[in-house]
Image 1 (cartoon, rainbow, N blue to C red):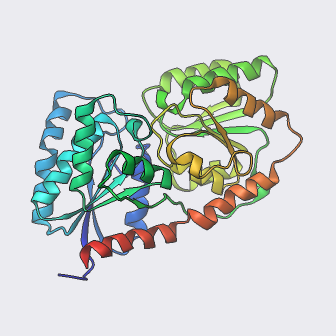
Image 2: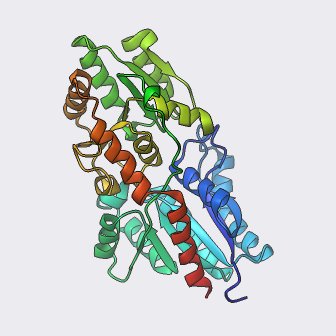
Image 3: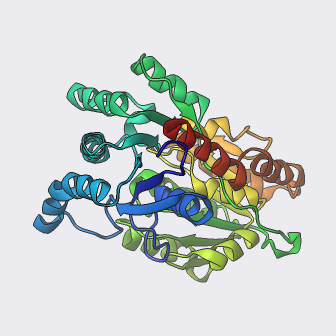
Length: 358
């Protein structure tokens, strides 16, 4: 009934953070754990290591029919569909939006980066499908003013809501930091700039820099990345697989430098926000919403995607500096405390829900 709290069906890959590296999963897990509405998670998205077998293809074909039946069976008021502007995600989530509307639910379409958010579509048919998906949604959510502008210029009838990702703010002890320790936390996929990391580390070792490197995650490049980094660093490299909860917080607390030199596809990385909250010196590729958070030299450092020389130079500068970058670390944490804290995120999201249910 009107003004009652709606029942929400929300999509994401697996929410098991011990086996799934996904920014969308992290966002949805926080919504369900901290929100005030009735949520039902609907699994949409490939799990880490899951292959595109005949069985997988069959499950994708059946997905919109299962989505429709779930909405009707559980009398869902609102479908919160989390997507990324990648080809398979667009095609899948277009069918989910259509299924939700056919089943009588309102739709919130929440965009989390993707290759063709900041970059131009190479396929005009896929671009038209994305436009139809956006147009069918009752509300569209993006992660920054830049993304709102991109969407508005491409599809002039779409007026998106801006809702930045957010993280829990945990306590810190400055003495926990391990000097000259570098952290990577994320999917082990070429889009994350792993080739650039390997080459930058190779150069720094040839220049006799001393540091440790700790990496966590899973993905297609795990074997290659771990093998190359182990050859380069030996005992100074540690790979811990997928981590979650207090174990992840512990690693963030002691990390000195956090790097994510992505090539493409980022939205507003949760790992970046967590690292800034932990007062790490962060180095990220400037793309999509990242540039709306990082002020180069003030609360972190920005580099160009696929630019190994810039990544190497930033790391060289930090590792050789006598400064502890205290002001930059404080600025990074205050950025998160003031603008990307979880309670504000939940309140703003639920206001969107209420506006559709009023």
